[in-house]
Length: 101
Image 1 (tube, rainbow, N blue to C red):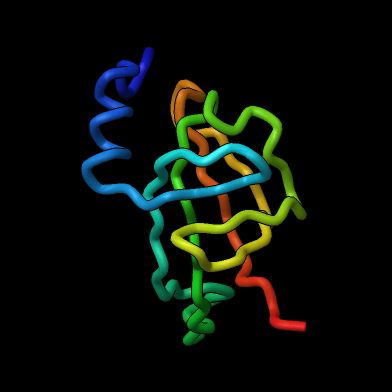
Image 2: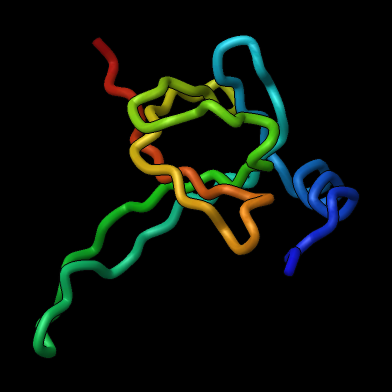
């Protein structure tokens, strides 16, 4: 079962999106930069971590994979993980900010 039809994905990404560039391809994405609680065990306090994700239309970037460099709104990132969402029409990229050299 599809979560969104193609027209809804286009509207969602365009209305609320940012611009992701990978190689020669540029398309809209949803960028989310937030803190999460991780590594919590047995009632322990856990660790606060920064999690940066971008939601993309899977067909816009079919070959994008871990360790690929990308830019979102001019900021350089590296793809850490790519996860399929729902029926696969959308993918979530877990990102790392590229360190200045």
